[in-house]
Length: 155
Length: 155
Image (cartoon, rainbow over all chains, first blue to last red; front, side):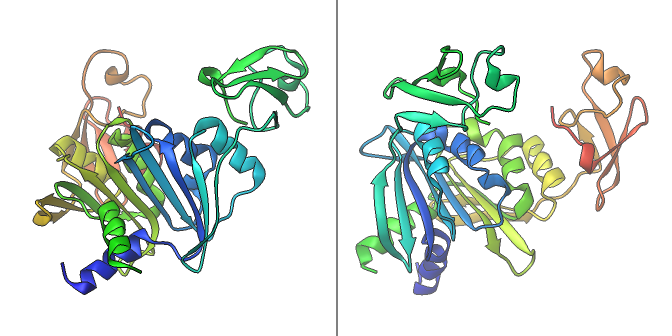
């Protein structure tokens, strides 16, 4: 491969400024894209999925140029991809790197499973206590029903 | 950047065997993924979107390892991404390259817009004549209603 070709490949894979979400379980890659709305932004995005990984069986990686995520967005990532690592890049250099963490409480971003819950009928943001971080279980502050990972819907 | 790092980047971006779909209009990248079911296969996939392009304003590229598309799948690509180029790679070498083309007739893959059409009520595959390839217009062989790009739904 010529130097020019190598440079062309690099241009596609490295990012100058932005955020890399690494170690996403492969089956959650497109869910992460959808909950963060990455399919509707003008930023350059690189996505790899079903890649070999030492830590996970198969991992995915998402690189978004010129985008830095807010804490609410990082919490969404933690809920669907709890193994993910967040890497912030400035001028091709890693300036921040951390494993995402499921917080103790979840505000606004998840829908309560109970159709009769006040949050599904009035203009009240949802609020949950996380009662199990491994095998995700959210307990609604208002109706006390439990929402689990398999029926978690994002707002 | 060290040689080792360059190699790591290359590993992520080059494919040994498989298909590259290049020159996808950026806004159609995730639609191409969805109509081809690439979000549900175990193959390694690399996706880039909102990349600079000479031909298009913003383009997307999808590289799928160890996957070669059938003509029906290529027709689907042509319908949502008529500017796309299909490149087949074997042993890191381009063995086939062509611009996708909207065919003269479309069989099975698109739903007829008319809810009363026989294809929506009985087990009959749809069939359309393509009456405009630029500004996509499909004419149903059975009910003669016209389905346009903005209300095209895939089966």
